Length: 242
Image (cartoon, rainbow, N blue to C red; front, side, top):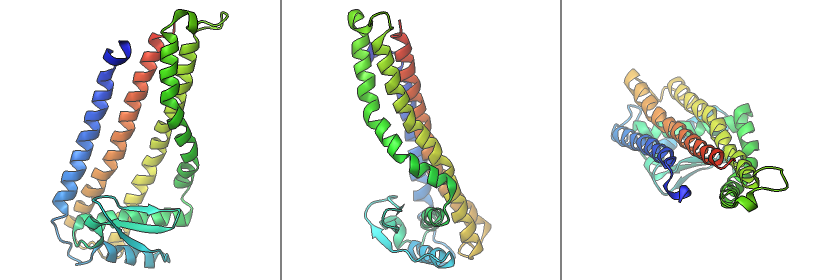
């Protein structure tokens, strides 16, 4: 009953609310500026081509389905732009395209934070796969006094839960490593748009910053939600320690 009705579920709800607020803000901001045509008259694809050319990069720029599904895929060295970005003349599209180009430049220049994050991916994926099973198993075992005590070596269930919690924390570490990568990609994108003359007014620069800031907040919210879930697991584990 503790697992389903304990007060720590409030932490999960709080994390969900934070994520929903960030996502809603991102969607509303993008929607607002997707209706504002850029003074340059360039599309998201045009901007990506300009940025790639100015940085001596020759990458395929592919249109993909969906909304805000834009990404740079380092496995195939290709830039994917969503339908809402690829052929759009809006300020929002230019910002998103420039941001993804920022990631391509990071990979091309060997940007250290993205190399560290990418190297951590296998570790984070492994931790994510085994964390919850270990936590659940530890919780079940700790529910039985006989099973939870082993030859005077302490609560086995608690120990298993703590191993699971450590594994779960790897996901949080990965999200924290992602933050500087995303912030840097946005900063690069804005600077390039200004340097190349794609952004021609202070108002446009301000609008692009708002779009990319809103996008960055979704990553911050995700990290906060993961932290709150981690805190919940720690509280549950400590309640079963003795």
